[in-house]
Structure formats: structure tokens, C-alpha cells
Amino acid sequence: MVNVSEPIGQVNLKETLASVAEIYNALYSTKKVGFYRVLKEIVRKGVRKRTSALQKLRIIAKLHEEDVIGLRLDYYLHMMKLNMAAIYLTKSIDCLKLPQATPFLRSCVNTIPTGTFLTFFYPERLRTRKLEEVGVKHYTFYERIFSRVDIDRYVIEIVDSPTSLFSPRKIEEHFARELKRIKEEELSDLDIEVHGQEIKPKIDNKDLAIIRSIELDPLTTASLDVKLGVKKYILEKHVEHVETVLRGIRVRKIKSIADFSRTSLIIIISGGGKQILRLINAALKYPITVAASVSKDDRLLLLQVLLPGNIDMIRDSTLEIRKLILDQGLELIDYYLIDLKTLVNFTVPYIKELEYSPIARDWLEKSVRKSLKYLKGD
Image (cartoon, rainbow, N blue to C red; front, side, top):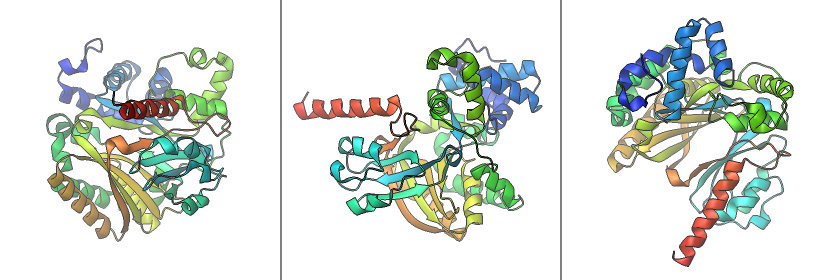
């Protein structure tokens, strides 16, 4: 058994990942926050007895801490009354002309260089239709779903040969197998993965603040009442609210794959709802997939995958992905090959539904400082 007091790099990583793959699969649908609440839920599901589950969850927390496999909370946007906008900045924009409905974009657009692909969440009652009037091409999505990699199946490739995951043959094998399997599943099960159950949770700014504080550290053991300055008995109620909008704990980053990735392929796909749902469920299990975003009617899909810097591998991988999309009777309507430095994702707003997280503001401040330094020739 792994000693969690030692760096994971000093042990057999393949054996370690294989030993905890079952717990990873359980995390993908675990709607709890914080290490011990997650542990209790895994035991309740009967995945493992408490002692075994505790040890394995500690290993996963260590893998997350060392960024071997980074985790994140995944939540239902529509239950939080949020939509996602995906914008590709093709030219410099006069921020004074941007509509009031997009205060966040107005605050930062002049610091973001042309060629940036930007995603951000905004309250669903606001309209972004006027963005096109000022030359901002954008797509609106109802849900974004993050990766739930099949660790057990791909442990060898993840550890020993991550570049093989970009090969057309591997991509074709995965989708052929998964799409065949998914045909046997009920469409309602595929729909739940994307849209969840029909509930109307009450979410306020404190709930969004909790999500923002722990979305990149879902197995935290920190005392959130101290961190957020909220009394413990009040916090417990809000944690329960948060858990009603969770999809689960998903994969944010696999270090071995990220180390080989220099670009991200953003694909906009149109087609029938059933085929879109099947493609989402198949794609999210493959290690190079980052996330999938879908429109309310399930007819528009944004798929984000990682690609290496090698031009031949980019070409071959892209052609294979294009082929499998067309083979499913879907239409490829747009795509962007983005340098990872110009791919910017912002998180949930939670102060009066207008301001974004401190991390987002920090990013803007750093961008401004870097621009000034460059202009000064430092």
C-alpha cells in the first residue's frame, strides 16, 4: 500500500492508479464536498468499506495535491441559473460599445489579446444577443460537463505512453467501442449525465462562494467556516444547497498528458440530440478530452480536447476526430486550434451576480502588468 506521506513519484504509479480506479469512478457521481463527506458517501454507496476507502481516498487526494491527476467539482449550470458564453476574439473591441448585459467582458476585453478563446458564466436572464452587433462572435451553452476518464482502461497509456493517446488509431478504437456500448443504454441515462434530475434548488451568493472556494480542491480538509468567515451552523445549510447542484467530482488535468499538450482543439458540432448525447458520453471517458458544453436543446455541442505541439500529430488527430463526427451524422460547423496561453476560462460570479472570482481578477492584473513590462522593454 502507498505511504501517503511520501511523494507519489517514488512509488509505482501504474499500480497506484490501478488500485484506486474504482474510487475515481465513484467520485465522478459523488455529490458531496470535502474529504470526509465524500468518504462517507463512498462508503454509503458500498464501493468500499471505510478503512479501505479512507486509504484509497487519501492516495487520490495526494495525487491531486501533486497534480498527477487534478480534480475539480462539476456542477449543473442551469440549476444555478447560469449560462456559459464561448467567445473567440477576432479583433480589438471598443469596450464602451459592449452592452450592459456583459459587465465582466466590458471590464477585461481590452486586456485580452486578439485570438483569445474565452469562456465565462453569466446569469441566464441576461441576453448576449447584442454581442454580435459589436463584432463579438459567440455561442451560448446550457451546460458544461467535465471529463470522467476511464482510469482503469487507460492507466498504462497515462503512465507509460501518453503520446499514444493522440494517435488516430487509439481515438478510433475508443469511440468505436464506447459508441457501440452507449447504443445499448437508455437515452434517459445519457440525459441525466448532462442535465441531471428535475429539481429547483435555491442557490444564493454564499452557495456560489463555497463552490468558488473549493471547486479546484474538492477533497479539502480545510475548515470552510473559518476560510469563508461564515458560522458553522449556517455553513452546513449552504453546503447542503451546493450538493444539490453537483454532478460529481471530475478530472481537471492529467499531468502526463498536459505535459505533452501545447494546443487545444475547440470543435463546435451541430446535430440531433440523441447523437450529441452519445458523443458527449463517449468523449468524456477519453483522457485527452477536457470538457463538453451543450445547448439547451442538445443540438449544439462544444467539445474541447488537448493536442500536442507536433504539426503532423495535430493534423492526424484532427482528421480522425472530424471523421468520427461526420460518421455519427453530425455536422462540424466551426473549429479553433488555440494555443493554451490564449485559452481563458473564468469561473462562477458570486457577488451580486456581476463580479467574478478573485482568481479571475488576479489574472487580469497580471496581464496588465505583463503588458506594461513588455511595452517598457523590461
